[in-house]
Image (cartoon, rainbow, N blue to C red; front, top):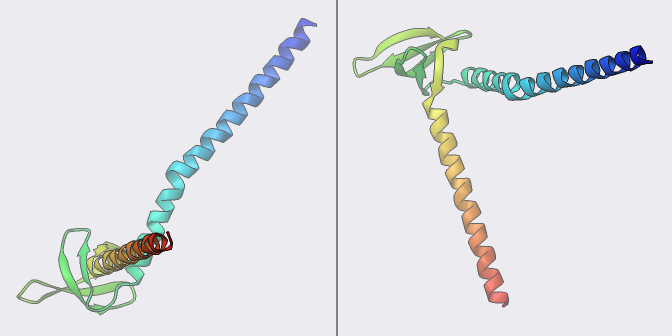
Length: 128
């Protein structure tokens, strides 16, 4: 009888260990792997949407304006002396033009939301 109880408690311990392992893997996936994949996808999308005239910064810290876009490379112009450098697209760290446009758009959306809220508040005050 005691052997049977030992086997049952051992199996229950094994099951709880497996459940904890699955829970830990799920947490690991949602906290580390998934956000990293999302950042990679956003960076790849940003690099593929670079167009002529955009102001970019490379991974090495070179700041310039895009002059020509090729399949895997871009040509940037840096400084007042108009030096042109050809770099790989994967070397783009950020697109300043796109980020400035996104900030301006977010600011407009925030202002529109504030105006709508103020109008709603004024309407409610007028009803009372």
